[in-house]
Amino acid sequence: MTTVWPWLAFNLFVLILLALDLGVLHRKAHEVGVREALWLSLGYLVLAMGFAWGVFHFQGARAGTEFLTGYLIEKSLSVDNIFVFLLIFRHFEVPGKLRHTVLFWGVLGALVMRAALILAGAAALAAFHWVIYIFGALLIATGVRMLLAVDAEPDMSANRLVLFLRRRLRVTEDYEGARFVVRRGGALFATPLLLVLALAEFSDGIFALDSIPAIFAITRDPFLIYTSNVFAILGLRALFFALAGVIERFRYLKHALSLVLVLVGGKMLINGFFGPVIPTHWALFATLLLLAGAVAFSLWRTRGETGAPKPVPRGWVPGSPAKNEPADPGRRGDSNTRR
Image 1 (cartoon, rainbow, N blue to C red):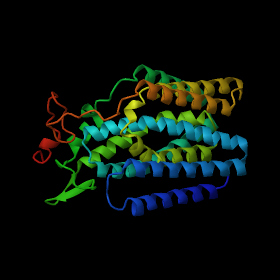
Image 2 (tube, rainbow, N blue to C red):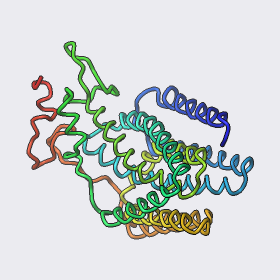
Image 3 (spheres, helix red, strand yellow):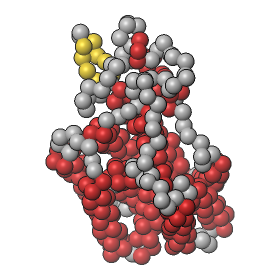
Image 4 (cartoon, rainbow, N blue to C red):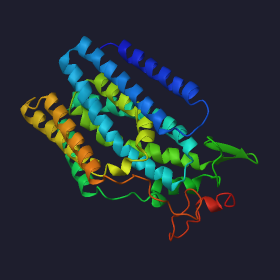
């Protein structure tokens, strides 16, 4: 896209969607049920497919296929975000009615962050062709690393970002509704919700470093990259609430996502060396096959299971050390007395 008008129109459309979401659909904090989440997911999917039709109609089949492939890859990779978000919410015991608040502001921050990464990546590729080999190698290395660590579970209690924030901020012991900061005795205090938001944003930033190069393997058009990312991220919140109760049944999905990264990384390297010998629709079909196969195999292997969440350790306040973990004097229990 050489003109600025499509960018302005699309971002205005996104702002209207976010205003509708925050000001109308979720004006009052409430726990999003599966039925509501499924309808929201369907709505965002219809919007994405309508946009895809517009790309096919106005820019041609090649651009349309690139958008669809990028959207599918970004949507599938965003499922990995759901696994991590669920771990964060469980560890910090975030009430169900507050989870949408975290995801809403997290998505808003993710859109800004990804726009900056996309523009920087597009500028780097336009100026230096060899950057494509770095992106391709990064994707393959990330895919292999994900495959080797597919069963590993992050240790939220020892996360460096959370420890850093606890040592430098006054943090209340309990949640204060949907507020991220509160004033007490003339001093500002962060709430646990702010820590959850910071960790969610940080996690998404790590995921973005993988997903942004992946879509550059499909297209170099910054507008298609940005719009496919935005539609995938906008639907992430609804997808979280739709899948949160059964996400653990998709235990082989991470294997497929790892292979997708290796696939697109290989495509990027081969096309970088030899020209466009691997067409985009091949990557689209291969991604669909891997994801559909992983979902079907996961559901078959976990038939009869409920997908109920694992219990979290009891006897500790949100965000405190896990059971049998030595206490950190910089944590919440001392936050009100340290200063």
